[in-house]
Length: 502
Image (cartoon, rainbow, N blue to C red):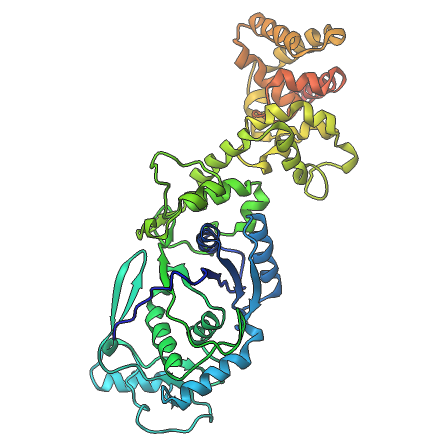
């Protein structure tokens, strides 16, 4: 048989994103959600969220909350839903009854070991069900699964927008299990019933689900031949089974080794990137580049509105897409630098106040941060880097990077002379404590010990801020003020003297 997938162009587009709540929100799932969302937005259609939560042993409610919060963070709130498969069990059983009555299902009591033994005895190397129970007429129940009787001949064709026609010879397809021995419908049956009832016109999902698509097509057509009607989830109840949806199977996401992204091996949790301080606009921009690119090949930075206008399913590449964290981080840095200063300050707030801040709440000062914010903004790629850039301003004592101390202070024979000379020079600047004056004084300190400015300021930076990297030193010292700057220089000298005596 040949299965057409074309949806009636007069029917309003309805797409669905159907994640399972079995872990953190995967970046691959986020990309799938985005491409569905784009199709809905550009067509004036409906973006449906369906939670596939029938696996009680693996599903957890906090994962559902994670999906919803991550989608909201990305600006992809659904138009409908979330619907839950766990609330639709009765509907699936109605479909099972219709398929059983129509002769499309049969009972099977074979175990995996029994099937394997029969295949081995027959010299069959390829694993698969041999149709043993198909003609036995076994009754339902008694711990028997229900299998779908696939056609003996013909071909089921998945007409895929991205991959073209993909043919599956029916003779090569097992009589697959549609209902477990426990009576629970399997994924493919539940999905088909949901897609019919919810009037889904486009099924856009990962390529790993392509092998299940011909099974879904067979079930869809079988339900249609049974006179199956919708339950009114997306409209009036009793409507006839609609035409098959448009199929589009998105390319797999791979890591730098070109292996499929793994939850165990790769950083794939959207929540993690949110918590690190990636901007949602940048994250969505990068997701859009995973398997698709704008009509102008040279454009890589664009808004969600531009992407909506440009996106076409048929332009999605079927080759695997490399999820490059370094490239995404670089892109995020560009977005950070492009923010108005006020927006940057506001975006940083979750990392500066509250439990996430590395200093007491009363130590943080809005005006102080605002003074250095433009300097910090130019030097961070993600917002989570901001606290380590400015903690020397809000902590009584700066957290010292011991590796930096060992290299720039303890390991530098001229560091003590520089710190002593800087202390004297800075002491004379109390009445005129400006970045320009501090710069000139430090330049003179360096000249006095035969060093250029960059080498001269290294031990000063570590002594005052605790780190070798941060905002421009002299602007930082101006904001920190003479009292704390001189106190920290004194503490650094005392530590050096103590080490020498030891």
